[in-house]
Image 1 (tube, one colour):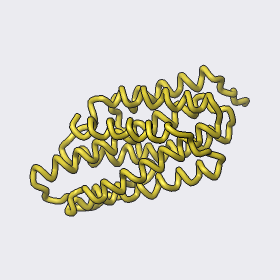
Image 2 (cartoon, one colour):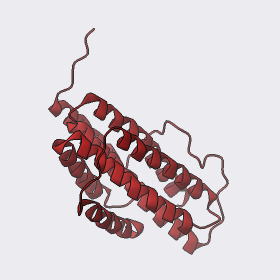
Image 3 (cartoon, one colour):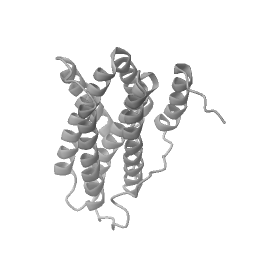
Image 4 (spheres, helix red, strand yellow):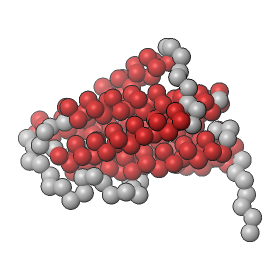
Length: 214
């Protein structure tokens, strides 16, 4: 039996199908158990619960964006090994997405209403970066993971101290994101020139401010 090499249109159609599930709120199947599995839920007052939910909604949206970025990059990546690395990282981001969805449910909250918009923008950015070159595409991974790791560290400081379950999820995500960035750097990712990192940080701050509430 022979396996057919997927063409560029084939890969794009596959990623569009994946986008429909991710952006419209389908909860993916995690390949690893959640770091919060088996942990008792904290008795948070309403203000603390809403705050924790807002932060985890931001993290969930961040994972939607990560899925979109990697999917856009993988759809048009020039080299098979680059595509394989992007899809491997995306698989771990799928775990993160599922873990954050579980936390939102436990906190009696919901994902961002604007996730389809976030997904579309991130997918387009990833595809454009990959069309330039694999090194630029991997450079976007390096910079994205650097910024995500920093904001997850901030969330560890801001989450209610009693919400050990959410904190465990965020801590593991932070570790994974640092590894993704390191692997992208080792694979040839370059430093993005100014003002791209600044613009990425601005867009991220807008997303975080909006997703926290909506």
